[in-house]
Length: 288
Picture 1 (cartoon, rainbow, N blue to C red):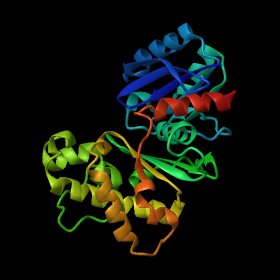
Picture 2: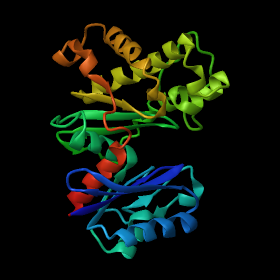
Picture 3: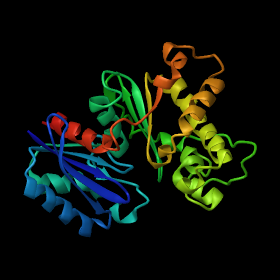
Picture 4: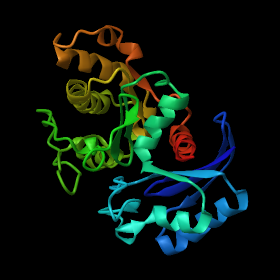
């Protein structure tokens, strides 16, 4: 069985062909331009490789409600060329194979649950902190959708008393994404995160905001594992700071075995940044 995978990001489209063992046989990446330019390239790539099914994990917001007339659409995205675009319908018409459809970060959570460090765990979250902040939620072994899908990168956080930054989110200013995503770091300090590695004050503040968000997720979702990925989390010095601050903010209120073993509870992504395409392959398998 051959599964096609499309991790549709706001900056690039990553495509891959993956077998049933989770082995990536071939991959490519194309820039995300307007649909008229990008979609024919993606469709031709998959047509040449003839997958048995396709899994799509897309940037959003996206309509995941199978009863909705706009199921499979990218909806109110800030990328105006893709707004209200029927990405699922375009691939169905072109390829005529079963297609699984979800958000990119839900696909990444599914990848970690199927092939990575969340395997065997019924309830967990995958958080990507990079150009934006996204959260994929696995609950009772299934991806959480609901009214739309989790937009947990936009939870509102209290400002650190030492932080005078106005926030970078055009919708909410000081939400998690507005305070802690890569562009927020760059706007606050005038340099990209990778250039600030040796400045402890940068990562103390960043870890504080991430820990605040994690405490909210712990209280509401009660995950059994928290996986942190994305470009900002390549700064590995963040992990011990985040764990320490999360435990401090919980202040003994949650005292489970997971919290007691915090190093195995809050962990880095485990699939060499392949969790997205592997999750898309799993979406393809489920669509079969």
